[in-house]
Image (cartoon, rainbow, N blue to C red; front, top):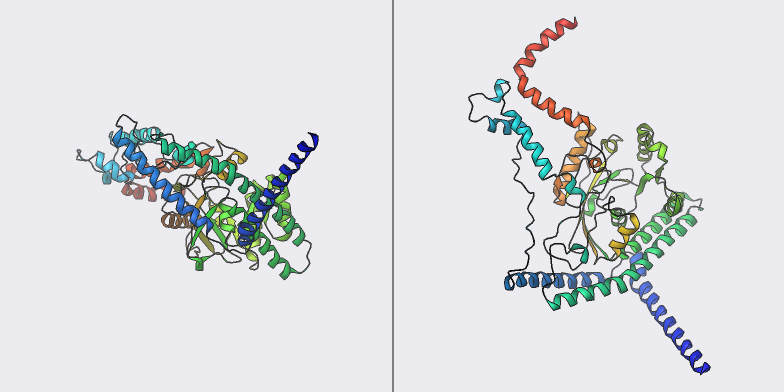
Length: 464
């Protein structure tokens, strides 16, 4: 009896060993090696095509179910907002409020009806706040068979429920272990490879090997997310000695961009596992890491970045000027510091396809570990990346106007909403300068240009 048990255990170990050998052979031969050399066997493309067909079928089933069973709650439509906004300037909207009066804004006089403009704007912000909407997940038009996105959708057929159940098994029992394994291998190789390259004395060979190691590791990590990335206009890729700026949706934006080229990262120094990765990376490549105390010194940060850009042999700096993650629908205010450095700006627009998974990181709701688990249990990461033509500051253009011009170009190319609000409103209160700006705009209309011009000589004589 004991011999039979021992023989059974040996057989189980043999089967487990065989399965592990097959698992690693398939992973290394079909995923890792092609990824390291930037090749694709087309497996991910076929997988995405199958997903598209399944999601289209699920959408049709949901629509048919609502026709056959009218009692089912219908998903709410997805309007641009809860209320209709005028979209005009302050002067235009106040002129509309005064249309029944003989008084016009051009006369520069106060009218009681002007207060209704501010009442309306305040109520619009309370009812339909366009800023905080950018810090929550993007709404889906149809259900993508993920439990986390079925708030407005319900199971309406047995077949749809079975497909959902099979999807859970595939995502958690097949894709998740595979992705975790690839991520661990990619990060381990990044630490080991960059550390070894850091000991090399030859600068040319060292730079070449450093770029090779970085590319291989990021490509393995991208495969670990089942990322399907379409790069457009590669002739506009960021060049050495330049500054790459992009809209920011997720921490994996770095993996998406570094999958197609090497960049010098900019950020705060960390401790723990992240600190180990940062220290190993900086040994082989001139990444720019700041201590927490340095981050508050704007002059020190600008000086170090300017020195990096001045060396034309250095990799392009990768910066996300929004300073926080936005939910894949908009581009918010770019901090002007990145545009005061000088040099050539290479804008990049990133747009994720929300049907296969929500790439937005809501840091107020999920920590990094929870977020990465959600990413690795999604269907896939499908993203488009557009390289825009390089841009430089025009004569007489300050850093703020230059930042807004670059932001508008990125928003237009990516099909994103161009917003003037600061992304730091995610955590902070509205700055006083925004309030003062509105006050100055209204004051200039009430006082009138003619009155201001008549006061200038009097003011000048008083100074004398």
